[in-house]
Length: 516
Ligand code: SAH
Figure 1 (cartoon, rainbow, N blue to C red):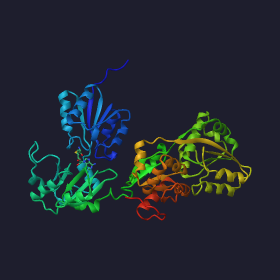
Figure 2: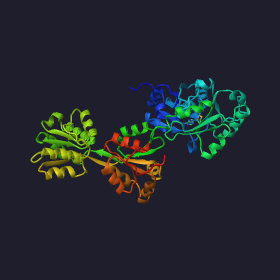
Figure 3: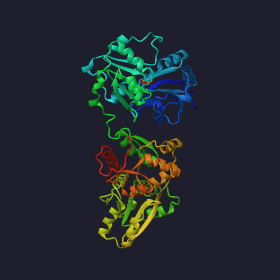
Figure 4: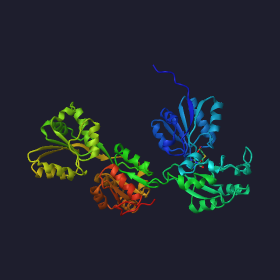
């Protein structure tokens, strides 16, 4: 028995200026239950990830542009059809956003609606540019004005004299008429030397701020080639920016960085880089899968107590190994007295998350370091089980065997090429990223395979490599990359630290460059 379909409702939701973290909790909850999301070009499409199975309709720029009447009709139709519609609008729906028109159309058609405010661009751009818009030292009035409307627009001409008396004036849609607006403010008595800040794509990783004066703003925008969208902040509060600026000062601000880890592994690296101000371009090169033939792994797992040491070389090995253990109807007691070694701390951490403690983690995180510790113990006659990827370096098994150990190497998972959208491949190929991170030699190879040789050569002139360690760096160098950074601690945090040190000019191993 199915319930009768609930009547539709349209939520006019403010998406905030761009940074997805500035969406409200209510906005997110509504996206999660939307049947349809109708969004603008000023709303960050990354927010659609909260509504993965909804219909996504872009009503923004270019080919997808629709008139306001068409948008109103679309919202009414969907609402009447019983859908939960989120009308996702950049900034706040009612601040120069035509949310008012949409609400009127919905009310007139008898469609239920609600409004969820958003962080409006004026406030967000000021905050992210380090401009406290109502600082007490500079007065107590703040005005929002649109530069889009003609002076003779409906609702009466703009009272420039009144506006010019406000301590801080924030202009939306001001790019085209900037010269006229500035002249009008000067004509109304505001000094030509009044400081002005222009914030282009505020809260986006490539946010740019230009500081000028009322008298020079139009020429300065032309000279800098600054294009919309931008917010224009006029007033003495702009002088506070040198002290208060924070967003554009983050160590990786303005850098675009491709991450070649698998989708499942990119998270912590991407988060950290974004926190430091970088724009992350996910470029997963590989995915992980069970071994094509699961029998050898299962047999090895059933024989766990016969080994002296079980070695995990990656967090993936831990996951696939322990999943296979469970699938074989076993649990960690199956390890018996066998001891466990890990090649690095991330592997050990994953092991711990899954309820096991590593008996040995080498001081530096490469196979050689682990090998040293075993050789120091003496391994003759000892039995080792190496649970690892299908294709991996042979140092460990070869050297252990040479020292008299028995080593069973068992494929625990394999890597397959991941899918990357053609747009992302094109963006990276055309020099759209400054840096690419490589966290294993295999990521270098898989990355290069995505491009034609001529494409690869061209991108390598603009995109430098950030490598997790010397082995990976050697592979990247051999593949034709300039190496910007090689981590000295071979972990993700180590890589991030090395990158930050390099960017702030403290890097010891700097021999590349990235445009900022
Ligand atoms: N409803 C929106 C405003 C829509 S009008 C809000 O509340 O923010 C469109 C104008 O908003 C643009 O022309 C630009 O002036 C401004 N704007 C919106 N997002 C912006 C951003 N991320 N950076 C700079 N300006 C932005």
